[in-house]
Amino acid sequence: MDKNAQAKDIIDNLRPYINQDGGDIEFVELKDDIVYIRLGGACVNCGLIDMTIKDGVEQIVKNELPEIKAVEVVM
Image (cartoon, rainbow, N blue to C red; front, side, top):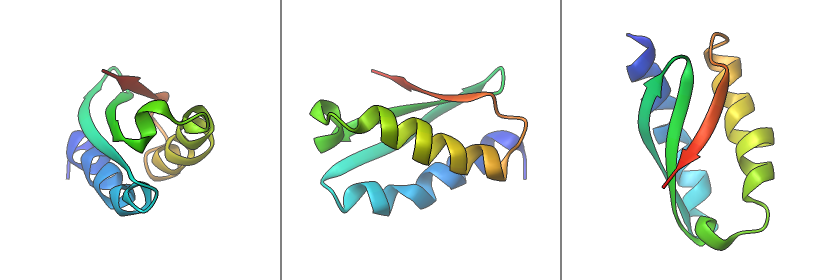
């Protein structure tokens, strides 16, 4: 499986956890070892989203794919 498909699978696997709190997360693309995601639902106005992305999603992605530099949110 290529890196792009792996990154998408990781984000898809995290989606149910984000959905539990009324939010949504979607894989957009992998470019230059940065995973780009889009957020929806309750995530849009959540004050904890930076912590969720950096301390949660990004760490999980980096654990699975060590070559990933970051996870960034796009609109």
